[in-house]
Amino acid sequence: MPHNLATVSPPEPVDTVVIGAGVVGLAVARSLALRGQEVWLLESADAIGTGVSARNSEVIHAGIYYPAGSLKARLCVQGRDMLYAYCTERGIAHKRCGKLIVATTPAQLDALRATQAKALANGVDDLRWLNHSEAQSLEPALQCHGALLSPSTGIVDSHALMLSLLGDVERAGGQLVLHTAVQEVALGGAPGVRHRVRTSDGSCLAAKTVVNAAGLAASALAKHFTGLDSRRVPAPFYAKGSYFALAGAAPFRHLVYPVPEAAGLGVHLTLDLGGQAKFGPDVQWVDRADDLEVDPHRANAFYAAVRQYWPALPDGALLPAYAGIRPKISGPGAPSADFCIQGPLDHGVAGLVNLFGIESPGLTSSLAIGDYVATLRTT
Image 1: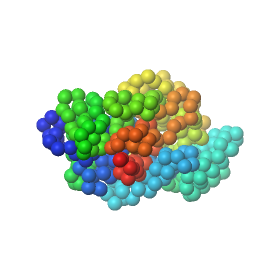
Image 2 (image 1 turned 90 degrees about the vertical axis):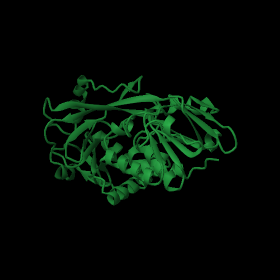
Image 3 (image 1 turned 120 degrees about the vertical axis):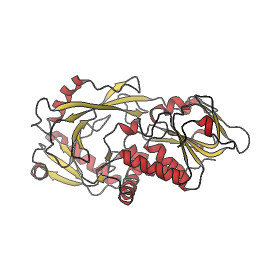
Image 4 (image 1 turned 135 degrees about the vertical axis):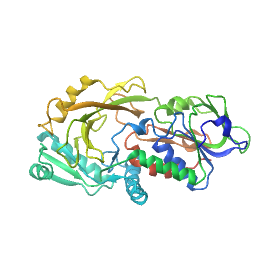
């Protein structure tokens, strides 16, 4: 596996350079490589999946919350089915554990009905309405006035998934190059050599197509694409989400989510494949993409939020775990933006695809995003 572009850069232009080896970049590289393209996957870190992909809930979403017709809705539902099939075929650890979306007050029942209607519009037709007694029969520790059961929600070992995607890329002839931060891309050039990708060590790689899948850095990187109209690059916003782990065993078998909030899905309970519970993420708007320290004092708000659906949460049971940053392209007070996947028909530059705002459900949608980009017109 090469680690330095200066020592391995081919003399002729490659078909495609994908920038960013998170789960989405890996899925894009896989889809392109399986279609016979020569793919080089450039990653600034020393390993794959160390950014957004390493700091999430590892939840396979059903496709419930997103506006009908949006890319998030379409690619989540498609990606969910693709992901379950892929994990089953490859033996990647996952579990279709299901989740409960709960109304903790009578006033939230209408919002729960609206959530069910939104899910139906997205093609999610397996939600089951539960009254208080039915919900408690499934989860005796749960307090709610009603709930939606989503049997298609699950969890996955995201690191094993990414390793499998990388294996597919490499078996198809693709190359991963680590320790390679892209500094700028000169768009255009001689016939057949559209773009020149320059890295921070001064190396240069010619490519017919460039896919910007740099996650949190995608907007900042695109500002260094000479020949791209800067008005096509959305401003980035950073919504930090902290997680707290539960000390001891959780009395739940399903994931538990409150009624959705404007900027996120509320402080929810998720389980890992070993049964360990964690709570989060919350929403904290920050100025830096590397602001990843968990403030222990935020636990106070977590206790209050969790006890709305689990009143028996013991004092002192929440331990600071980790934080992630959502790569948003809509800021505080604004509706959550859709995935922004720009091809030449959007920005006018042949052979360039930019992926902006690939937040949740990016993990669930990753395989579908890969196919979407691979079939996107790039000329």
